[in-house]
View 1: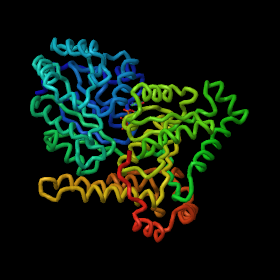
View 2: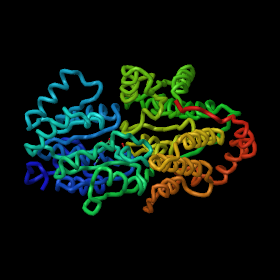
View 3: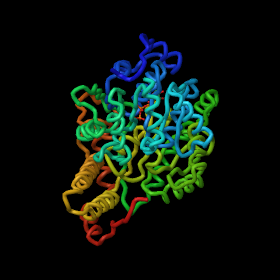
View 4: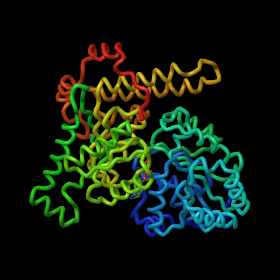
Length: 483
Ligand SMILES: Nc1ncnc2c1ncn2[C@@H]1O[C@H](COP(=O)(O)OP(=O)(O)OP(=O)(O)O)[C@@H](O)[C@H]1O
């Protein structure tokens, strides 16, 4: 029996409309919510922008007790807390930016055993603190610990693309509170990652309610653009973006936009680069070309990052494009992101899907462009091979070796995606995640739009394999680190 006081009746539709301002549930949201309210352990894997957060936020509002949400990123926590506060939900977060006063207030609320807080967002590291664990025991003893939500649950697995060792310590929850339901949420998990998460968190696979939804994002237009070290692809990108701005600035369109309080040059997007230095130089270069761009990476002061994020979310002039490392990714929920560009091949297939998934969360058509070169591919593969060589060969570290092998196969799958000219890109993504459902595309990928043109562009745009292999042998693609 779950360790909470249960409300006998929930009017889920009423709460959805009244608190969350949504007209109806998306397919399966209701079933997931019902399962967790029923006290089941739940695993939800669903496409980016599916609406996974609602599946623990709504139960937290209708149920007794407090929901602890474990989240890997500060930006993600603050983003969610802000939107829940707008809906007048009592939500708190404890992280490195929480003031001592606020922390005391939240702790006092927990200490009383009957917290007023409905949702508390914390990091996995915070969950390891004895002081926090003591407070959770107090809450649990009063049957007020409603559930644990593990957001971005792929971070639990060594085979996940964003593995965080501290996520593995979340096994403490099931060991300590076997009666408190856990809900795991992720957009990106292979079968192996799912199994690993289940075992690590101590969930009983035979009782776990598993919801696996389609990975499909039909409104995203996937495209690979080919490049080589010989040619700067900056101009290609700027031409593309300026063309969009010009179309929006045409008199009729501009007055239509003005009536909606929109600027022609507010075509919000994210450019992902692998290197911090590129973030800053690329953002500066774009600004010098009249494009409102801001850098975002973990090395920037917190205030600068917060300013970039807030300006971009508010569609402020000068903040139209964020040039970011992967520090800006998981869970960012801005509805009108019209494009996501990968400046180089990302580090993993899952990372690519997750980052591209920031686009088009309002359901409108949006572009996901990946600039691919064989030189970048070989740089990435060289780094992976080097990491593999550095691994000690003893049995104790075989898990790390297996993890590296997974990274390599994920990268290889992404290379196949980039080099592929025989299949719909939506289909390739579904195949990677072993999702055999429908993948409607229409013309929403470069292959379906014009397969022959794709082959021509590939032949013209990429350096030949012979050339790249000579350069590789000369050690030209040896790099030390990404950032
Ligand atoms: N039933 C619904 N009706 C309308 N909008 C919804 C519904 N459920 C969720 N949304 C909206 O969908 C958007 C995406 O939700 P959310 O941020 O939870 O996505 P997610 O599944 O966690 O995606 P990701 O894995 O990409 O972070 C949010 O703006 C949310 O308000």
